[in-house]
Length: 102
Image (cartoon, rainbow, N blue to C red):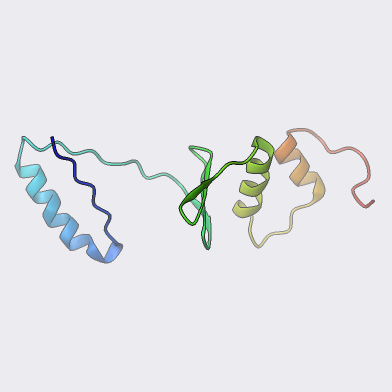
């Protein structure tokens, strides 16, 4: 058994199409497509919400559940201002209590 993995850039789509033509013409070749999954990203940082994984420069970062939720929330809302109440509700799943101005 031989396995081939290809990583092609968008500009390589004509090459990819030709490769797929060959694969489809050969019934003995089995191919699998990796599911596209949404990715949240910043330069050097990739977050895969479906797997709850975070990578920095292709190295996995281990975070607690709350740390992951907070980072994901902030990256998903980059460029937006979130209130203390909004962050607390999304990350901790309950209404905030106390005075956030202190």
